[in-house]
Length: 225
Length: 190
Image 1 (cartoon, rainbow over the protein chains, first blue to last red):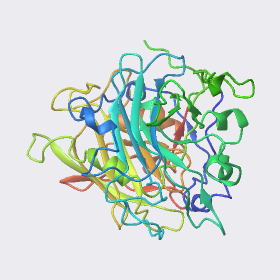
Image 2: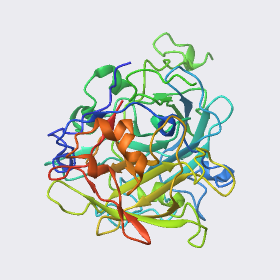
Image 3: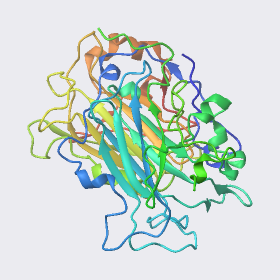
């Protein structure tokens, strides 16, 4: 299995300049520590945490969406009862974060934070609104394509993944140094959600599907002793 | 009247998505992760009054030696007896977000040795704006005799080995992560 992860040192993404290691990475013979991992979220995640449209008195502004998918390992097996964390900008492209200075309105009915546990088939789902594009200052007219941030845990330390989900047909994808940091087209496609009629609800919400496959860093599959 | 969906120029609504063709690539955690990750900022793996509790703290520094104020440090370790597991009262997992000075902090216990002959160590993930994928490293314990025979430590250039071993400051362990440049931390891949 070859990795499709983006490089650390990627000149179009200016923030990488002083943060990418200069030394080559050291090959690691995986030990018991890396072959195991935490089980998180049990008892801490509430059922309502997966609905980002019901966290305040009113409904957030924006295009209501149902986002769902599966969390799988590199062999296609479901990752069961494990934590999925998600965060995002609001429909205007503004994060409910003190550091975000984009002069777009905050939405008093939207925090942009969700979490859930996968089920026995590795399935997870969120109800939210489609985030807006926003400028991020990397270069003139640098606009991030609309995206959701995902943080997932597999069954082992090796399978930890933080990534972003994009929407099909977004014109900013072609110009985004972060998305295009993934250097192969097949890998980029795996960051795109697709329209999902099964979870699209008539007169209510548009569905998107996004499968997350962890374990991509592995040069060889983990053999469980 | 027939349904508009029966018109030959309107594609049928078919629910099908491609099976993933491989692993999902990593993307940066970005600068605004705290809204999504702070709810589980598990800096205390054990309470401060737990027997054997010890602080683990340090800074994340960039290639100019400047603090990285928007990094997430996650750790995964064995308990004092060498057990690698999450159980009630012990997750074995910690998450700390650096402050304006680039400082992270945990309260934990010294990990016990795990099977396989490795010296006791803590596995570390670093995430930050500017990192398109996580950085992986380990923290070894200072003054631990088993360090001398640990195969991973011994595989590292002796000049750089100290970047993997915490400093003993009495009541706490101190360990900085240098992402780039002078005394750059050893980061791993597999």
